[in-house]
Amino acid sequence: MSRPGLFGTLLIVLRKDLLIEWRTRARLNALIFFALATLLMFNFALGPDTVLMRAHAAGYLWLSILFSSVLSLGESFRIEMENLSLDGIKLAPADARAIFLGKALGNTLMLLLLSLVLLPATIALFDVHIVMGVPAFIGILLIGSLAISAPGTIYAAIASNARARDVLLPLLLFPILIPALLACVKASTLVLQGDPMNQLDSWLRLLLAFVVIYWSIGFVLFPRVIEDD
Amino acid sequence: MSGEVAIDIRDVSKRYGPRWALARVTYALPVGRSLLLTGHNGSGKTTLLRMIATASFPTAGKLMVLGQDSRDDRQAIRQKVGLLSHASFLYEDLTATQNLVVLGRLMGLQDPEGKANALLERVGLKARTDNPVRQFSAGMRKRVAIARLLLKAPTIALLDEPFGELDPAGIEQMEQLIAELKAKGSTLVLATHQIDQGIRLTEARLHLENGRIVEAA
Image (cartoon, rainbow over all chains, first blue to last red; front, top):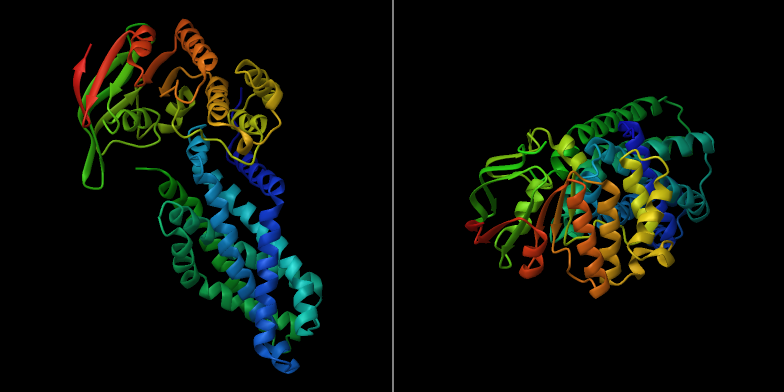
C-alpha cells in the first residue's frame, strides 16, 4: 500500500469533483443558463447602440462569469459540508494543500467551460469580432478562470461554515478580485479590438502575478482554513 | 503492543465559543482494549471522539494517540484511526462504490473498486453498489459508512452511535463487526445510549456529564 503524494491526492480530489459535476449535470446546466441570462440582461440594458455594446462587451462577459462563479464556488463546498465529507477526505488522510489544489483546479475547469459557452454568446449578442484571434481570447479566459478560482476556493471554504454563506462569499470575494477583474476586462478588450499601443503585456503580467500570488496563498493557508485548530 | 497506551488524554478541555464541551478530562486507554463512552446528549462524547480522530483539537491539555501528539502528528494518527460518526462522510451524488473508491485511492489501496464492492456486499448492499447515496435510507447510509470504516482497517476504531438507524439485522451485523475488530486487536471506543449492548461489547466504561468524567470503571 503506497499512499499518493501531493500530486496523486490532487488528481484524486479533482477526479472526484469532476465526477460529481458529471453525475449532477443539472447544476452545470443551471449555472450556464444563469450566466447566459445575466449576459442577455446586460445586453438589453445597453439598448441598440452597437458602438457602446462593442466597447463594453468584455466587461459584461467578465461580470457574467464573476456572478456565476459565486454559484459554482459555493456549490463546490456545499457538497463537502453536506455530510461533513470534507472531514472524511481530511481524515483519510489527505494533504490539505492537495485538497486546495484539486478543488481550485476543478473550479478553474468549471469556470473555463462556462467561459467557453459564454464566448460565442457574447460575440453574437454584442456584435464583436476578435481582432487578435480566438486562441488569444481563450488564453485570457483560462488565466482569468485561474485568477477567480484560487481566492474563490479559499473564501468558499471559509464561507461554507457560516450561516449566511451565500451572502458572505461575494462580500469576501468581490473586493479581492477587483485587480484581476480589471486586468481581465482590459486584456480581453485589447484582444477583441486590437492592441496598437502594446498594452496587452502589462495587463497580462498583472493578471499572472495575481494568479501566482493567490495560488501560493491558497497553498500555504488552506490547511489553516479547513483544520479545526 | 499489549500494555502500551493507545489513547492518552491528559487534562484535555475543549471550548466552543463560551461553552466548555469538555473540561479537564484525563484518561488512558491501553492498546487492544475497548472502552464504552456513555453520557446524555451534549455530555461531550462526540467532541472527545472527534478529538481522538484529529477532526478537532483540544483548547487546552494534551492528547496522545499511539504515542503521537494529536496536533503535531495528525497525519500519522489519521492513517491509523477510523471514525464512524453521526455524519456519514459520504458524497450524496456518488454511488456507494465510488464513495469507497475515493477513500481507497487516498489510502493507496490496490484494486480499491474490488475491495469496495466486497465490503459493500458484506454490509448487505450488494444490489445497491451503483446507486447514488442520495437514494439511500438512513440505515443504508450507515451501512456504507460502516463499509468505509472497514476499508480503512483502523488500529483504533471510534464508533459514535454505531447502532443508530440500523435495523435488527444491521445491529446484529454491527455487533459481529465489533467482535471481529476486537479479535484482530483493534483498540475500540464506542459511544452509545444503548448501554446494555455497549457494556456487553466493551471492557471499560467512562461516563461523561457536562464535559466531565463522573464515573470510570
